[in-house]
Length: 309
Image 1 (cartoon, rainbow, N blue to C red):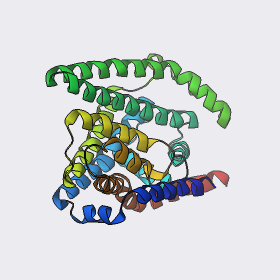
Image 2 (cartoon, one colour):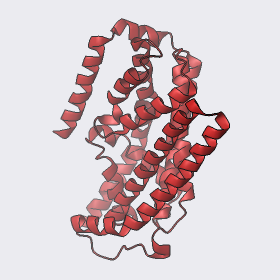
Image 3 (cartoon, rainbow, N blue to C red):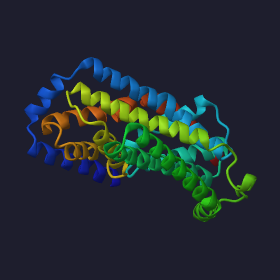
Image 4 (tube, rainbow, N blue to C red):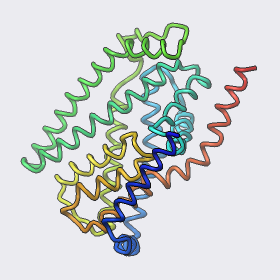
């Protein structure tokens, strides 16, 4: 039922958008896209999804004392991507938690906490990027960068301390839900087992790649936006599209782009570019990940079957 509702929301959003924006204009913008820049954006997105994202996920798990190889982290991270379209409200993320429990014996609480770390760091970095865009509009480039870097450092300290201070509370809470047995308290160095710096580095790199892919797509459609406005509004569109309201942010991304950048290009061009963003950043990588999802689910299901015997 939930899956039906989320896809119904996507359909309604596109019906509303196309009731206000001419389909012929959108199609014309898609026909005249700069193919070189489009494929450059697609390449950047694939690098982010298939190289940086698994490295980030691996760094997060290492923080929690779960040492996986890059290839295994990639199977978990990429194999679950298509499921986000078939399960509502980002419930596909929980498949990763189940996989880590069944295959690597990582407690459910720890697997769920890995998701919390990822979202907390990503959201904090998005805040820092938005601030950098605002500072760039009012200060020189050097001062804006230095202040944004200082703010990011302070924000990461706050995030680290908050996560470290709340980890055992969250783990105890989740253990009650799943009724897990055994002690999974994190006592080493007062909390995390691994280094936080790689998580911040890969998360920052991942967010920057997503912004660069959007920038290349805008240029491919002939949309030119000042750097301060781009950093603020493009990051806001990323945040909106990450909300667990529609599969892969479809509809949410298009609405946010058409609304936030309305003063910089025609709505037909903006809608066409945002649809291209959905294809480049979500749909096409997910289609490739279908090849990884099958062995991912087979291994998970075989483990569950073995446990039941």
